[in-house]
Amino acid sequence: MSNLQTQLPTDTWIYTSWEEYEQIVTNLLNEKAKSYYYKGHMRLEMAPVSFDHGKDHVVIIFAVTLFAALKGILATGLDTTTFRKTGVQDCQPDVAYYLRERAQTIPAGTGIVSLDRYPAPDLIIEIAKTSLLDDLGTKRSLYEELGVAEYWVVDVQNAQIIAYAIADQGSKRIQESQVLPGLAMSTLEEALHRSREINQSEVGTWLLSQFQQKED
Image (cartoon, rainbow, N blue to C red; front, side):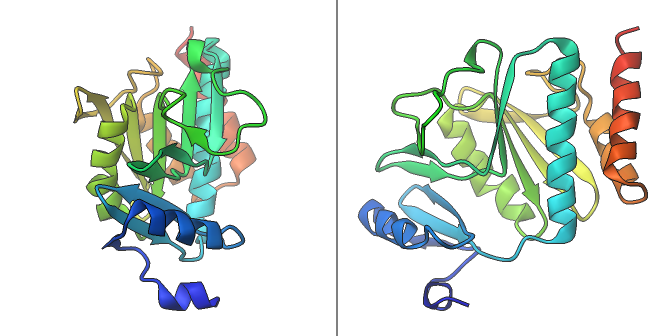
């Protein structure tokens, strides 16, 4: 474990100036850490990613990308990318998507995505194994303020998805995606449950059959 990991509290929000936060994040470049900044507080997530977390991460990305491809919806997915409003907010969600006319908004070669320059993603997804309450609470408020259109939390422990549509800096629970119309949370949850019993290729085959049935 690095000195930084032993010195800094993790998985909790601590009061920090933006300048201090930037210095800490710079020093963490070689660490496997996710960092967030919101309302004058920072949060680091440095716990090792579990096998179940990693599997659900892959299943969700595959499912969303497959659905978008079959429906002809332009989509660009991002894995653990930094989105930043300088001096105000910073986040590294597990998954983010820009859809339709925004799919090619961010040019190749971009490092940190500046939300002072570019729009927020249409969809953000957090995969929650140990961070569930925070993902449902403070991070949801953060994404509401960033202007994300939709936010999903994948509850790894229970293979459930808590999804929210976001508007006017507030959010409401939904059972079907609004940014990807026709994509039901129940279908994604079934895919997660199946992934506990069968391999991901078989889950992919099942998802393909489900999405194609909805087109018939």
